[in-house]
Amino acid sequence: MRHDSIDMGDLSYSPCRYGNSRILFRGPRKPLDRPYLAFIGGTETYGKFIEKPFPTLVETALRQPSVNFGCVNAGLDTFVNDPTIMKICNGADMTVVQVLGADNLSNRFYAVHPRRNDRFLRASSVLQALYPEVDFNDCAFTSQLLARLFATSPDRFDIVVHELRQAWLARMQTMLRQIGPQCILLWFSDEPIDNADWMGRPAQLRAAPLFITANMIDALTPLVRAVVTAIPSPEALAQGANGMHYPPSQASAAAEMLGLRCHVEAASKLVMALRDEMFAI
Image: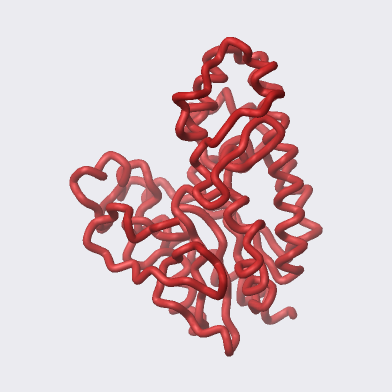
């Protein structure tokens, strides 16, 4: 994923690579020959438009290098299929894994790009049989695909959601076992962590992390040391895009993202959890 080609304003993201990974991560590159923390996640972990995202704030507070493996619009496939990332996370004092949605990952119904997981590649014969009236040729992103499937048949869409949840849970279990037990899950979202029907949420298909329930998180707790819930306060959300760095063309996108104060609050919760867990090791 070429983050250096994405228009992100006037910030310097110092893109760098680790080992044999083909992905450009946010730099500067961190040393791996002394104790370090690792962070896996999507746009929020990467810190799009944010000068000091929560991994950087945690690094400053704990005075320990933090390797930022966040990727813009990433899904689980970006990480679980990259041996370099998995090896580095396995060697970290602790790895923080942001809970990502179940939409951007390959499954029984459709395939996504192996690194740019928000890109829809192709529908399987199973999905074509389930939705014979849908033309998949002009769907470039998973968001477009899912919106079309839901609009065509909400009843059949339940079958798709069930498959995505099953694939997500299996993929998460695989990834967490590769990382090892020194891992913390991070729920960083303005959505509550519960078992409510996703269709009942105001955001519906725009909710993040999409299709993830509290029961799914509970199923992962035996594989991690802790689950940190970082739901921004109303005061933090009210700050909007204040202090973020973005070009005028990205103003609407920035307004929908979690801003500076949200990252500060998430970092504060992570620092407390990391201190507790690392001291207990």
